[in-house]
Image (cartoon, rainbow, N blue to C red; front, side, top):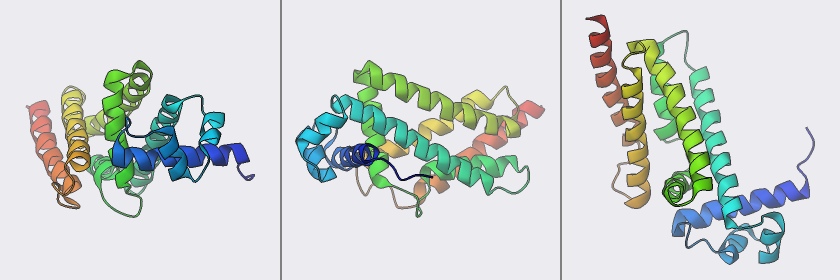
Length: 202
């Protein structure tokens, strides 16, 4: 695999700069000058590689989604055999668990992206595509436990809990005890899966 081009490296620096600044100041507070400073580049280079701040945001949204999808795939690959419940837990862990691959800046930035999705149609298009893909995958995993009829409601509920934890962690630092989100949502999942599975069988 060849070395990334100078242009790719610069674009990655700029996207990483937005990630850092946006996690601390939000999207409105992420000026091009602040992004350039965080990236260690001159502001002119930001304008050279991206037409505007929104283009950087859209690139960041796509990259954050790709990171999470890699994390989900990695966690699912660790599940032995066809343990359907363990796969649901692995999905939840991928989104919420702490560890070497956890990134609080990414969580804070994703919350900001979700807010910008309400205001900007271009951001909404990417955000909606990512969320629909994630929920569809979770729904498929849940359906293997509960059957298809109840899977949409259970998957939507669990995904809403994930997003809620993201908002709390980003908006009110220190409110969510470290490591508690994944264990709590997994307990919620167990209750929902048991109830849904029972209703499918009856």
